[in-house]
Image 1 (cartoon, rainbow, N blue to C red):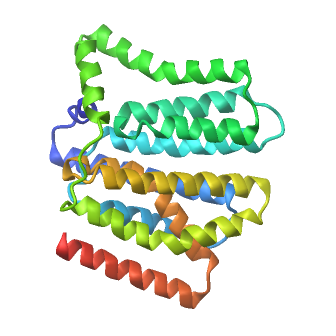
Image 2: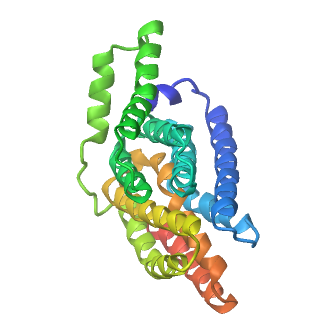
Length: 282
């Protein structure tokens, strides 16, 4: 949100905050990966992929609410998988995961479709459509918005009607700019993810339930993220890529970690060449 970024006018402070939050996001990615995928290889590659993908986008190094949104989405996914895969019904895990989804949209309203996608994923895989779960989900979705409106009202920061117009403007479907760098970035990312996505799905279809659910959610959010990069290719939306690159980075990392050294070298070479071309021509 612009109001969040507004508290940090200095360029040095904003860049420093961006770096700190990118590092914290990388650590969270590492924890997520080791918890659900049991990948024994070095996590340095995961850090590198995520940070490099993010830094490819011009104008990314300015502190924005998207950094908070990325962390909220990642930890929301963590608790979603935990809620789905454990035998005991845990309302607290459902509550935390949905609060995380709502926070994601508070700070990155453009990706509001992620909320129904994730909720349907959770209810379908847990096979529960109980009134209790619905009430918990609605309450969890409302809490961050009640908090936001309360803060604005108490400190008289802005009219609530202005807040409404701000979000409506942000979530309105933009025109796809086929000349923008973000568009070409999305095309390249989609091509790069075709083979990994196929092998990724096949690999985790043969794994245990936890890895199957985690793999399905990661793949779903990867495809959703690429679609959002297509739709929001404007350079003005650069901070949004902090959120959108979380799961594509993890998908690619998990693929690279599971293939032979020869194929791994090929993928990394293609990735490096793609990055160079993107920076030269975009």
